[in-house]
Image (cartoon, rainbow over all chains, first blue to last red):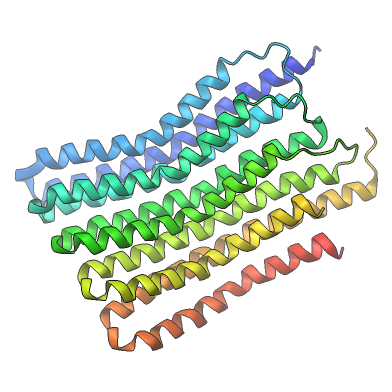
Length: 324
Length: 82
């Protein structure tokens, strides 16, 4: 059996492509399904404006689709790469790339579908606020795509950087860890951002005059919900760009892999939780705009506490990278 | 490449630390977020009790945080003690 580095790199690229589009297809499909479901409810409530609801549904779904299109692009790049003379370490980089983009598209796809659905439902309730609802939906779902874009940045770095100077042990673990870190951490942030944006569309439909404070609270809430994905990105960059000494033993490699896994998994919960907190605040800012400042304060305190476990996870990752 | 027993044990401890803190961080993050969402709702209903509600939220979140701190302790034990 011929197991030259080139063969192993090709195996990694093809399995990476499968993982990438396999995971990447889940999120957008679920999100678009939610949008379509809400659009159906909306049309049944207000049949006269079914054309507008239909248009809004398609626009919302198109934004949610972009996450899986990123995954498709990375999968195609993995399939048609030139592996000629690639070193063995490239196999790890390509596996990490596929994992990163596939997992990273999950949360953003589901998240972007939520404001789409809520905007469709809102148009049925409050046709006069249609333009504001579509604008809010677009701003909100665009922010939901940020974690998927972070994942694409890391996936493309892993695809195209030259890692031939990196020793295979522990380099393989650093590169797979880098992919897992941003990919997993993006799941929570993408979904959390969607929860906030969905609540803002619901709020604007309930009280169109509150659109100013609602949009402000939504953007602040979404920004905080992005933090776990940014922690993931930070750990990925450290793992990709830090020079590691070659080693014979397994422990230093496992420390780097574990660092990526830790910040990645640790970011999921706080991302979702920050989104819940932001959604709760936005919903009540819409009902009672006079309370916007108080609600924003409670939201930020609650989000800060919810963020703490992501920070613990990042501390453990930094210890694993720099102390172990 | 010779991998010795002690090296393998250390590698497993590092992996365990990452998994412990990573998975352990999910629950508190979600739970505390739901608490904060409901606190915003409660303050919206009854703005006069904002102080009491914020305090209740923080105490509830502190309790939900405890499992995250257990994970942190176990991760640090795995890294530095065992």
